[in-house]
Length: 423
Image (cartoon, rainbow, N blue to C red; front, side, top):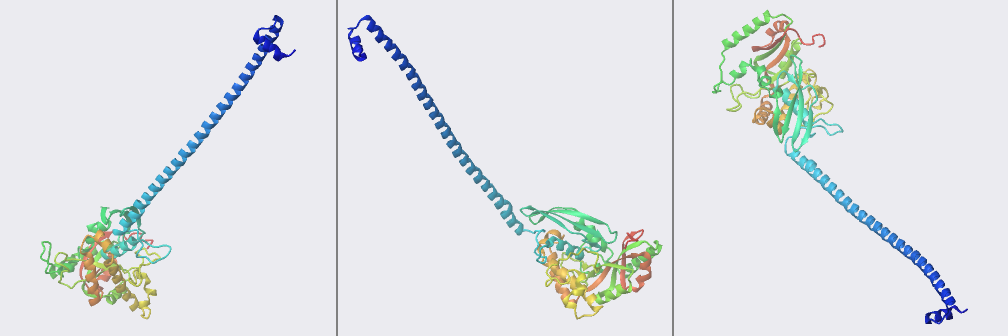
């Protein structure tokens, strides 16, 4: 049977019931197949389309994340670089500029160039104490820490050469000014108490018309000396004494050296140096300035480094044996000549450290005084008007008549010499 012809006659209604049944069964069968195929195709198309959309979204999301992360990284890195640049610029570059404007105790401009250099403050404090504070020494290393923008925390030690007690002091500095300083080199007792007995110094300034000016007669001085000697006789012979001795006349360094050699049991701890003519004030408002040096090698800490040796020869007195300026001079000339060179170097050093002196010294005219003192000793030589001496009461009583003193003053008395079994 021709199915195509049969189907045509079905559409024209020209078939019998049996043929109609055959056509309708075929139609049902085709509809079922078509429905099945349609559902299968739709499902594949939907699944494919859905998968494509999902992958596309995921790809777009990944691209967006990468773009955002890239931008965030750029922003973060840029921000970090800006912060680092600001930190370096503000806290290092700008801070270092401010540090250079004001006194910097941590600088190493004075020390010899080497891998290790002492800070300037180390030499500053040594020179200041030895010149201005009789009976004390700076006997340990200093500490100085920069806090940025001209601010520093500083500490130093002072050793009392009489009691042998040592104490550390702390100082805060902010842009060339002291913001915290207690006692130590700032104590008036440390500066001037040791010289209360130097009446002869005051008698050298008869033109002082200030309210505190005093005139002490020879009789008063003699009476005071007698009381001092009487007091020594009443003490236990082992009592340990700190005494200021003013000479009848100024002594050269050779004369002082000879006295020191003649009295080895007496410990000369400080030598006051004449820096103005007797009877003349250094200035109208500053009548009294006392400077000197310690003639002992071991009372002051010394490192292997030195300030400029050409500018400051014998900054440390112990170097006198190797100093080329004294190589052709025999003992004892070499020894006592080194005193004057050492004193002048310390004086010259402080004269050139104006920022330090202006901040740490009690007197704003002190650098001018150092300059005038240098001129005076260059013209008149290095001479001493008096000394600070330590010894037992017995030693003083045995030796004092052989010392050409004008006046005596006892600064302090201890029951016995400190660490008597160790010195």
